[in-house]
Amino acid sequence: MRAKPTLLLRVGGFAVNSQQVNLSPEANLLQFSHDPEAGTLYAYFIELEAGQAIYTLEYPASLLLDGDGQIVGLRLDLDDGVTLDQLELALDDEFGRLDMETGFLSILIPGGVAARTVALEQTAILDLDADERILGLELALPADMLTPTRLARLSSAMVSLDDAPHADEGPVVFVPEPEPDAEGAETGGAETRGAETRAETRPQPPARPALRSGFVALVGKPNVGKSTLLNALLGQKVTIVSPRAQTTRVPVRGILSRPDAQVVFIDTPGIHKPSHKMGQFMVDLAERSLPGADVICFMVDISQPPSQLDRQIAEQVQRARGHRLLLLNKVDVPPRRGATYMEEYRDLGRWEMELAISARRGQGLAGLLDEIVARLPQGHALYPTDQVTDQTEQQLAGELVREKVLYFIQQEVPHAVAVEVDEWEQKDAAVYIRMTVNVEKSSQKGILIGAGGAMLKRIGSAARHDIEHMLGQQVFLELWVKVRENWRDDLSAMGWLGYRAKDWS
Ligand SMILES: Nc1nc2c(ncn2[C@@H]2O[C@H](COP(=O)(O)OP(=O)(O)OP(=O)(O)O)[C@@H](O)[C@H]2O)c(=O)[nH]1
Ligand SMILES: [Mg+2]
Image 1: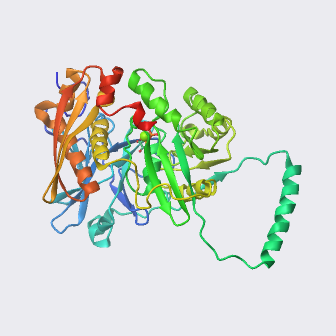
Image 2 (image 1 turned 60 degrees about the vertical axis):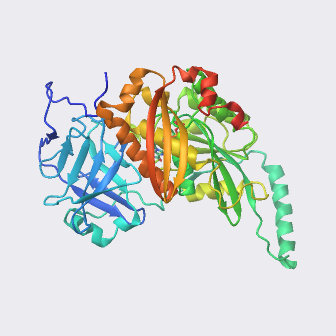
Image 3 (image 1 turned 180 degrees about the vertical axis):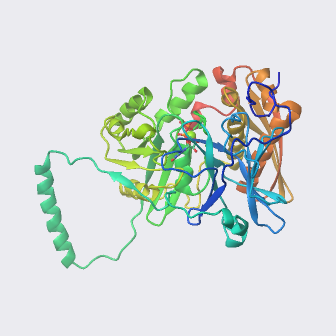
């Protein structure tokens, strides 16, 4: 049976058939605030208290503009991962409207009339409380949408930002206690001081900027935010991100070049207990990044206690030769019941430094980068300075299609998907792309296509939008769905689909 792209309806045990649903348990409020520096717009349905938001969800979003191009609201493209209960606060007669057929949730300021929508490149981050009610959301807006003119219609509902995060917060740096062998260090210190004094009196050679370069492995269990961090450090999307574990399948290099350094980051698949050959392949590739890395960033999710997997990966990292940094990510998530797991993570091994960061909000990243560069050897550029990744446009385009599958479809289906790029042809000012989306079973094919092809259309149009943004030109995207029985347990099928171990040796 094919899954319908509608939302779960659990209203008092009876089915709701209407196309448009409005629930208004009580009059809620709709408030906006914006952070021009971070390029963020917040919309909230209640008066927020610190620590109230505990969970997050992510969904594609668009802005709603009136005939004068002013923002009058927003639209979220939801799917059946959201229940009506969760939407209790958002569905208010005054501003919230859900279209059951499409899954579009429109939030409009009272009296606002939407004349057009502008799809946002980044997904909206929805904040949920302990009862899993959606309290509000955060949108990353392009600069041309954060002007006073665009925001004018929202001004009556705009409140000033108080405890919302600022991009320049952090970093929070934890340095380990000094080693007890202070004696040797003291002697060394005296010599160094002497050398420094002499150097001050000598004529200096002409300053030649020294370049530091090397490899930095981002490792950790799935879903801790490794790929989010890489994109944030580069300021550009080179690797896909999703709220589901095991998103990254092969190592992706992201190259950051600046006058004094070239850092080659390696985003690795999350290390996990594999249940098929594809999982084993992913874990092997992640582990192979360790021996050659100059710096290893072991990344954990500080909002959760350490798991057995964290312990096991920490042990592996301890055996590697590179400098070891512990990255405590997701500091923006308020800890549950005030619990803090910092000590427990710190105790998983010996770390040169611990840094608390938020990859999603960009907190602490400038400090992290400085610490990484300081640990790289002197050397030469390893890649041309204008290259940002080792991936081809074709590979990234295929990954963007897989990313949309991960967003729009639940459970096992996205993990059974492999995307092949069959055709890529530049014709005049547009690129024609044909891809095959492989799944393992015909039931998965049905889910992927959806009723009347609606799901595949949705995936295709979201992916096309991102690919156009990447290529800076018009794209025609054709998606075909094919069943390749159990390809994740078949090494030769994995090879045809581009998952060959020798390509990463
Ligand atoms: N709140 C919060 N969420 C984050 C942060 N960093 C990443 N995330 C979210 O965590 C989820 C997983 O992020 P990814 O970057 O795909 O995680 P990953 O470690 O690369 O996962 P795998 O590829 O599966 O190993 C996504 O929903 C991200 O938006 C952060 O600093 N704060
Ligand atoms: Mg990843």
